[in-house]
Length: 327
Image 1 (cartoon, rainbow, N blue to C red):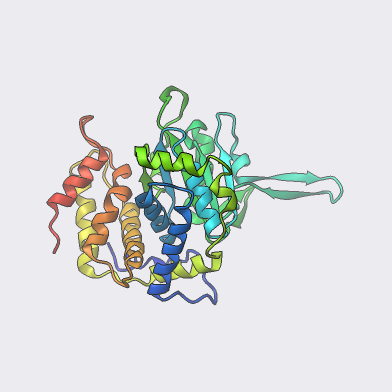
Image 2 (cartoon, helix red, strand yellow):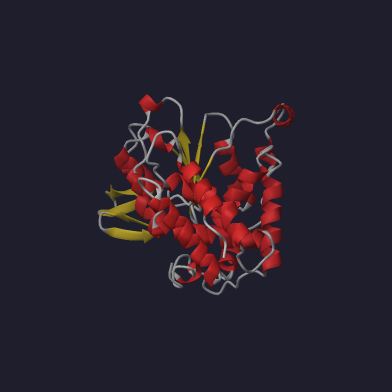
């Protein structure tokens, strides 16, 4: 990986204008506040909340794959409310059109001109619920938005809000009624996570909290979008040394040499950015190999296609982590 690729704060995403980065300690405190606030709604998924916050700080997108009813949608809502972001939800269905996501030009008879009506993608946090229920043409409506933070409709390009994060959920049951996500779209998700079923104790706590009004209804914001943008700037300034960059490159190369489809350079960049965010969570302004090892499974595994059906992408990534030496 080149030095330029290892410095994601210089790639033009999310122009900060006059906003100064937060000190690392303040950015870490911000993450703790948001995580604690989300935990008043989401029980027993502290690790998943951390992973989501890492993705948001690193300017990435998140894919949640699990069975219905384990709190995927509530997790996204809790995060958006905690950061006082504009939140939009798109329910993906077989009859959903690309324009239902991106927006459409509508003719105004009074003015005699076409007016653009923005779709739900024009928000800070966009929840794509059950994204694999929509056909590939509609799924692909998110590709430009996720990669370039912009939407082009009828030849006119419009920038999306900053910050902008897509949190998509994927139904992994009823495979006969869903469409497989194209590889190009999967590769644009920084992380893929599973929440899993709660423990007995956690489920009992969930039932207790929701016996009356749902806690999401009384959730207040503990940070602003400006705070988030400044924290993102902090992440972009975290130092990534050459040995750490070489380590990421070696891990990616291992997946390419030991799978049918390995991690792309986009995946390597995503791992560096996620590791920078993980360092900030731990109160550091530099990345260590432990950050890379913590983030690699959720960043790399969904990008890998194994050679045989007896292993998974996660198996290949875990093999890479146990095989590639840390210099």
